[in-house]
Length: 542
Image (cartoon, rainbow, N blue to C red):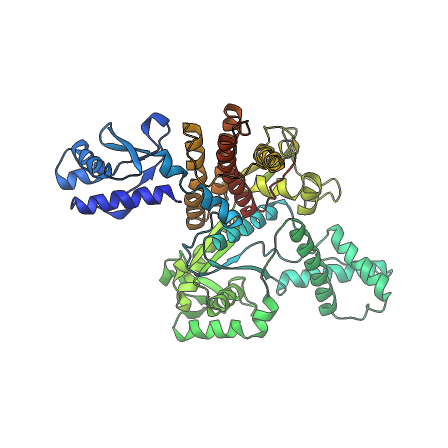
């Protein structure tokens, strides 16, 4: 039951009956900070009073009188300049508890997406090395967002774009080839912009062990392909261990071989949007509000990064997606406008592409920034993070902050087995409920279908918080902000801990125990489902 939505519909119906002119978006239902101000509050009277040329408190009073006819409302106060503070009847609040329990794993599932096809492309790191800490944050975000959108009724495709063509891959191949030559006793000549990581040496050693010196005469393509495949397998394994999977892995080489680049350039040229200047080829992105026209083909005849990206997004739109979500690093900020302009130039609505920018992460240990891996001497890898704190802790902590804010990841906090650790705090709530449920099962105490004895405010507030899950799912999906789920489940866990401290769940009174059991079962279900959306397993025992 989405109480906010239900109350909004009640108020909208009353406004229609009173013939009050209003805008639907102005009917905003909020939860007051102080419990004395009701279960929910609405300020619509103040928003429409000017048009009605009436005092907002008088308008609120009219709305109040109409609303009081509802069997679900116990009291309404008109406060301040015209706030409508609504108190719900306990019977109404408790009425959906059995449905929450019946839905179990599907509780919270909604259908605001109506099957709309959404492509979420994230990570997409070049297969030229191991995935590091910054990538982990984007991986967690992309996976969490995809889970939430699917739960909200969208048809989601999770996609990884493999940049396996272009100059960086050439440098990868050359770096591996030169390391291989060194292992074969020849002089290495690594390029200045080559790759010098330990993994490059590892690849060269594997080639040497497998082929001896027989590949000295091989062309660059062999080393490029071998390196990409090797590194891509590591990337897939590290992401899988992090709980991140993809539906589609799209290769830039495949996009090129399908003729997508030529196709996109043809479309742009036929629209008169391509011109040559100083022996280079430009796209008129200024036509679409970009700050300057962009180079497509450089003077040496090679493509800029924009060209295959245009072709790739053309391919995505041609696959029938209604919306595209790209997760980029913050250093791509200036790239967004030219990409959107290019999409518009192809003939598509640029607003169908939403780019989420990933801000940097700092890893802290004992209050100090950890910059280097002890194992490799390079950046901290996803694998190292998961090995040290576990997949669930890593996923939870990345999900606690909005993607567009810089983040300090406190390793010591993530490892704590105390309530200071938010994951421990939430997990303890779930485990505590599971323990009570197990004890009740041993005593053959069933869940109650109806709440007739329990009438305390703490139970009512806890169930209202459980129902809020539907509204949180809606906002997290629409705003594309998974951290709203994490914030919510932490608050729910806190309310349960307080509830447990005040009320005994299992007593000699079987009826009361049965009713309280149903109440906390809804909390357990909600915590479990919320954590699942952010890639965290709810533990049954501590």
